[in-house]
Image (cartoon, rainbow, N blue to C red; front, side):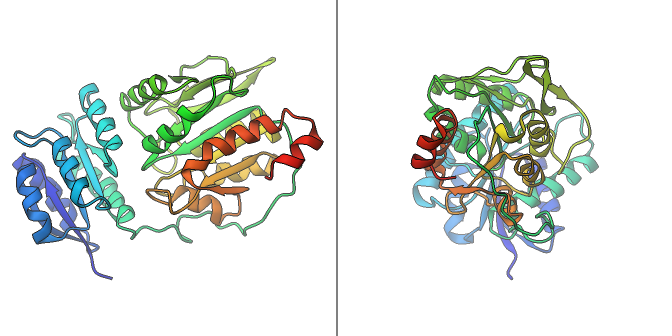
Length: 361
């Protein structure tokens, strides 16, 4: 298989050198070229024919957002990874870029990072994103839990919580699902989106402004209530636990899982313990297999699991791993997920005979 051709676009000589050296060290990647501005990048794309582009957000002249818009006009399917700063402004512009069609993002090295740690982070994170987005990181035996596919027979139980896990492509997937939920959603929802601090706060604010349900970044000790959605805070695992008659949120900084904090598996395990057969989990687009083992625990506790289908996912890693493990009760296109959620949480509140005649699970 030919290596993935990458075009690096950044106005900083230092960053271009850092990215170039990190990428050429991987035999699966070929550095097709570099560009110091958006206009140069647009001119080089037809010459270099890259498979993936890394694009700086803050550049003089044609900035990253403007360059992205032009790329999408002519190359709607070309994967673009935005490079942003770990600041509130950088987070806000990154979310805008994702809404305009960017495939993924990565934060630039900070002043506190050494050159060695910056290189290692780029090799680990950026290379993985490039391989997944180019179709070279398909889930297989190495990432999917090695558990034989199986189905668990279950009745149509009442659903009392919605848990969602997602990663690459997740902000746009969430923007498709959450705003379509009704204000009187009869269950609370908890979400893990793989994102760093600041990004999760702004994502919650953005979704809240677009939605009828209330969306907030999670705070420890908050009581779960219907019609409310909580997003895990960047760099903190999110869990739920029963305290008396209530279920409350908790945050911790225990070790990352799947190199992620927050991790979907951590949330799903706690949901399985707290809600058992009353849990509905949804796993959407994302790299890797985070969420697969947690989905199995939810299913083993009698709960249900929906996953996004491959054709509508930016990356069918996380949902694909759930499906491969036999933990998916339903596979849905992105545009149908909100409707399936509403039907399922409503069905559990109908008389059993009426629900069984109108909804299939």
